[in-house]
Length: 323
Ligand code: HEC
Ligand code: HEC
Image (cartoon, rainbow, N blue to C red; front, side):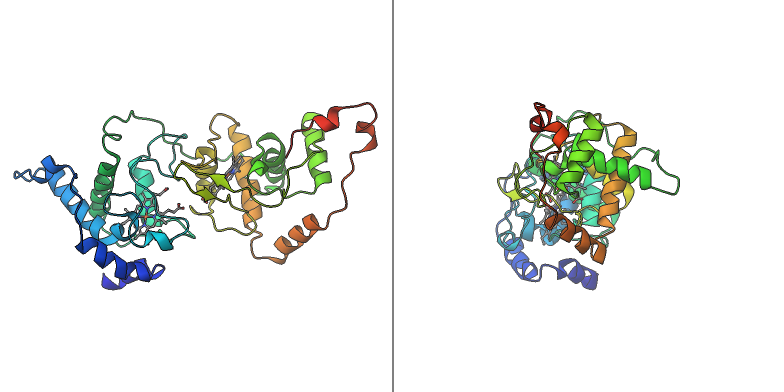
């Protein structure tokens, strides 16, 4: 247990030392006092007490006594620990703005968030995890008590499931760059000429004006007051894993509290899965010479000129949205 705990903290070294200081110090005053004082030892009292102890042992060093994400280790961390007081988390299988289901919180705690200080707490017994979840919900005041039941987004059956994914990837590439404009925030992965051709084929209008630095991600605001950089799929570590179902979940649900929107209902299941396969095809190039080649091809591409047939008295090309 001690070993596993040490492993859980390994990525944060310093945080372990700081945790002692925080846990020994002030206690949270306003924590469901009526449940704490309950001498009949109700199920809720037992669970919340267990949850509070676990939180003080494992989580407080980063997430803070009040769950405000301001534990003593927080100032060393980028991205910073989640402020748990609004109840909104980033990676929940819900539509934008909705509170997570318990299953989302379990997944965040059990799997951690790759590439951040939030490690995978796999050794904690199930009842400790559910007690900790009951406890962290108290940081959000009555938000959970008033919460309406809402839909949990689950991966549908992949309509492209058999073998060769070439067609799905081609479709996904076009949706990514033209229809859904994922590249408004994430990088583009095609040349300007290819983007022009894709959009011309897709909508009859060739995109011919492009955003600055279109091969870099655009830093965007979050509701927690700091900025995040959307991932570049050829190089970044994805927070929630890269198996197709995880990609489906995060693409369709969006990322809570950030600019990454929900795509539920905006695209058909076939289109959503096509995009999963396209993003997956980029991720699988990560760290390979092919990724370097793609990057070089994009940076050294020839200068783009709007094809002649679209320039003569034809304003279509210049109407293309900025990419
Ligand atoms: C070493 C620091 C650290 C510790 C310890 C830690 N966390 Fe976190 N936690 C983070 C960071 C950093 C993030 C935000 C990562 C991001 O924004 O991508 C986070 C995010 C979360 C989230 C939000 C997930 C989401 O999808 O937005 C929850 C819930 C959470 N932590 C719960 C816990 C619980 C419960 C514990 C104790 C068992 C714990 N954390 C321990 C650093 C920590
Ligand atoms: C308005 C900006 C914006 C748009 C448009 C956008 N994203 Fe994102 N995306 C983000 C942000 C911001 C993040 C989260 C960065 C963070 O907090 O780590 C993100 C994260 C992701 C992730 C990573 C999830 C993880 O587990 O780390 C995937 C995959 C993703 N986006 C795919 C897409 C796809 C596919 C589209 C188009 C259908 C899209 N995004 C459109 C801003 C955007």
